[in-house]
Structures are given as C-alpha cells and as structure tokens.
Length: 227
Image (cartoon, rainbow, N blue to C red; front, side, top):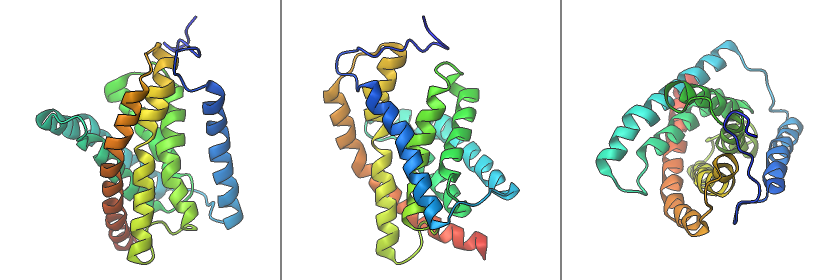
C-alpha cells in the first residue's frame, strides 16, 4: 500500500537503513537548534525576511528548471550541473542577507513548494520537504551557527572556509540520501554504490568552488544591503 506514491521500501539491496536516515533527520536539526539557542542567535523572522526568502526561492526555481536546465542540455556533460550550482549560489546569497538561523531550511522548503508547482508535482511529499530542508537548507544554517550569526564575514580565509564547507556538504545529499535511500524507498529503485561514490567524487570539487565563490559574493551583497 502506498501513500502519495511512496512505496515505503526498506529492504532494497544496498539501501541505507531507514533507522540511520531517521536518526539524522531528527538529531541534525535538534543539535543545530540547541547550539544556535546557546549562542543566542535565534531571532524571529520579519516580513522583509520572508520577502527575501520568497524572492530567492523564486529566482532559484526559475534558474534551476528553466535557464540552468537549458544550459545543462546545451553543454551535455554529466558532471557539469549549472542548474544545481545556480540554485546553491542564489540561496546561499539569500540566507547571507537574512543572517538568521532557520532561513536556510525555510528557504529550501519554499523552493521545494515552487519546484513542485512548476515541475515535479506533489508525489512523494512530504518526504521531499524534509529532504531538501534538512540537508541543503540545514547546511547553510550550519554556517550561521559556525559563524555565530555572522555568516560569510571575517577575513578572506574564514569566508572561503565557510563557502568550502557548505559547497562540499551540498555535494552529498543527492548521491547519498537520494540515490542511497529516498529513491529506493519511494520508488523501489536499484541502489548502485559505484554510481553513488562516482557522483560524490565528481561533484564535490565543483560544488566546493561554487560555494567559495558564493561566500565572497554573499559577503559583498549582504554588506551592500545593510549599508
């Protein structure tokens, strides 16, 4: 019996055990929230914050599913993903402007809503809200915690390090959680760990570089907005 096209397969050969995935989705945001709370960097979102998140998510949606996807088809190189890199770049800049814990997770949920509206449809929800928000979004919020509420600020080395961390982390969810768990869990897809490892190895150098570039741009844009 399926729910919203989710088959619920947990015994596909090579599939990551659901207990490990559930533990991550519960503990990762909880631990990050506790750290943010101790640092005193949890603040209420204002109307302008929601506006920034909506605009950023909308631009990221247009880029990933229209402009970026067209460029990907034109280039036709498997490890070149301008659509994905553009989404990462846009949302990193968006969250850097807001500078509030939770902006990353909420921005990715908004992006996922828009993505479902214009491209995917609603099959598989709410798993994709959880997946996008607590991986890609949480990784940007992690930088807010590591930087104690001042993401992509400081000296150039620190800014680059923050960008490298979030860029590297963004290279992991699609191969690991999507191919290793969500795709087989929802659709019964075959798990191929050779492809997962290959995708990680070919993805992380590029996403790391894009993350560093996004960090420096975020620093400039955020300062300009606050000026």
